[in-house]
Amino acid sequence: MIMLWLGIGTLLFLALWFLSLPLRRTRATHDWQQRFEADDHAEEQNLVVYERRLSALESARDRGEIDVARFEEGRHELDRNLLEDTEGRRRAPLKNPLAGRFAIPLAMVALVAASVIGYQWAGADGDLALYAAQQNALNTPGVSMKTLVGRLEEEAETQPDNPKVWALLLPLYQKIGQPGQAIGALERMIELEGRRVDLLAQTAQIKFFMAGRSLTDEVQALVDEILDKDPREPTVLGILGVEAFDDGRYEQAINYWRRALAGFGDNESAQAIRNGIAVARQRLEGAANGTGTVTD
Image (cartoon, rainbow, N blue to C red; front, side, top):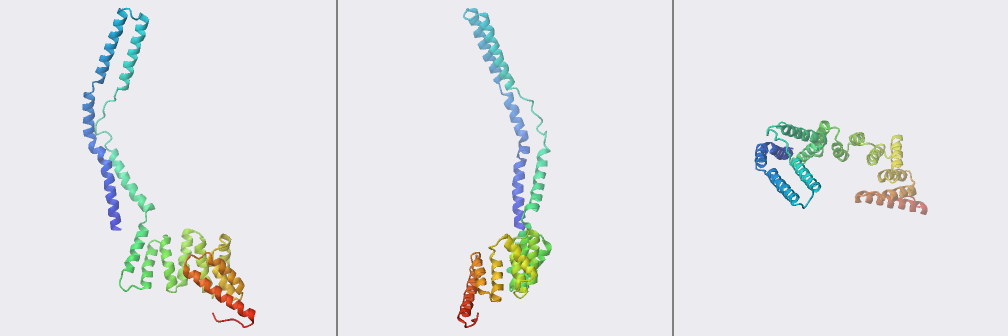
């Protein structure tokens, strides 16, 4: 966290330095503009050109090369060009170099405030604190799983609305044999992230095994909700396969597990499903041959 804030501070310092450039250069820019305008003789040169062309028109008129009407037309054209050029070059008087000097400091304060508030609103300081706590626990010699869980539970008390805390606690609760706490973590994640199918499926799975591999009314309600949202959800299909297997409905269990197999991405889960299908087939063959069931 200290390195993060040092980085943010460095970037803000650079931004403020660039913002302050106009304030630091305003006097030099004002003086340069004044010298430029003082040395600008464009209007005098335009007037010389105007007088030369007017003199040429008068000479042409006096020699009889043009009549009075053409002379007046040419003179009006010269007058109009001179006026347009003069208007185009007219400059507003230079303002005091200190005018508006408070705008840049206000912009600098606004930048700092917006950066801090924006980071507090959209930044990931909670995730960084969570990562630091996790790494600190893991790097402690002889740390146990329960110690890591305790450290993450402290973070959960500090930032209960961060779903990543509960996502880290969930598998740890399962590993140390605390299914009740695992369900609590899942329910908190559902509160924060909505009734996502994967979260509901994990909840149904844990409650199913806590009920002794039984489809209680609560588990069945979750299963129905999940299948309504995603009929191919592999975890729920796996649950239904287990329930059918325990009830001796081996063919139905095989059908559930085959459908589940297509949705599992990890090899360990897929292999467990394959093993279950193989056992269910042996049971079916044993029943067909009249030899009874075989050992799992």
